[in-house]
Image 1 (cartoon, rainbow, N blue to C red):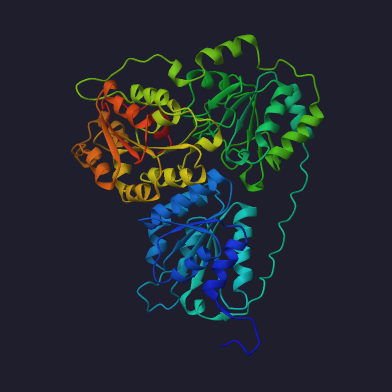
Image 2 (cartoon, rainbow, N blue to C red):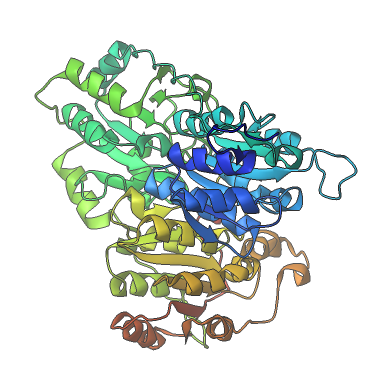
Length: 552
């Protein structure tokens, strides 16, 4: 196919798709470039997108996921056909389970004779993503625009397959057909919700991923003021109500003893864009048997999916809260906001307010002592990313965050090894904040390839490795029953040396005095990122493990 004399210059499908993705709103693309996605990726860059090269496709997918969550914008990941996609599947699965707006642009080998052939649409469907394919030159631009619209409007991961035999076809230089506009969300009936709030004497709001949108915090706080509700979040929305005198922080396995006590005493619990799943509600035990449970979610099929509810309201969190506030009016009742509760939150509202016996010594530091000290040292304006493992509760509760954009928690799939890539994506979305990636030794080694990416990008990141020389969760789960633990214990690793080899500054911490090296780095000039190799105590499980293993 060639362009006729006088026609506008024709472009290949690969070039046109890349350009349209950027014109449709994607400003950042992560990836690993191979022959199959080379042209499309370069087209995105030429159209104005920032390209971030990862060292592994799994890292690229998680970086894109974290960037989209933290920035609130659709992101993209660009992959080679076949093995490029399979390498990225864990990160794609995490994003799909988390309803992250993400476009996965992947080349596709459609010939079964190709070494790269795999049923890519089936893979996408298997992990909960939406599969689309550019099947012709004529429809290429419209399909690319539709992929971005679907990711944005439905908050879905879209795997956009770009077959090798279609990429080289020529398309006319015309604007893509606009995808159909998203169907308007019907106005929710908020009357029953308002009536339940009016009757409640001890209401608690638990806000989740769906409450991270624009205007949601203000709407929820206004409604809470009108009904006397206390405020809590799921882990992924941690920080949403930071600064409120009635903020209980996280509900569920990470809840403080006070938060668990107050949530358990509620006569009404409203989940706002929150699944109310076993983690957030401690397998249902956090809700009193006689409490009224209401769930507000944009997705009808999310209502009651994790537990029975007394009332479901389908709608946008901010709009539903604003509508209920109008019906409630004022003045605000006392509700759960008594002087006694206010005093208790002020005195015991954070985990660091709870006393503990420091278990450090003999060359090992208690992870609670470590994390509290880091919280005091590091600037308040930070974005914290946390990997999975026995250690994860400590940075998740002892490192304070300024708001919901300060905490990026890629744990919907519970995969170890995503933490460093999460930190990179979040750091790029919030360059105004100090990025902190908290990893276990297992996850640090799984994601170690991206240490080079941190240095290459010039990120002023603090990477903290909680090294217990084991897969600690398994040690503490199976050890008490007398199982052999050779399969989950390892020799101690010199992570400081690994960091320096990649271009980090590094400090090994075996006791509180070793943290002077962190203070020195913070004092400047911070020309290289910092790796904190923390040798932590190994004798006790994290408090949240008992809750976590109930789900296994």
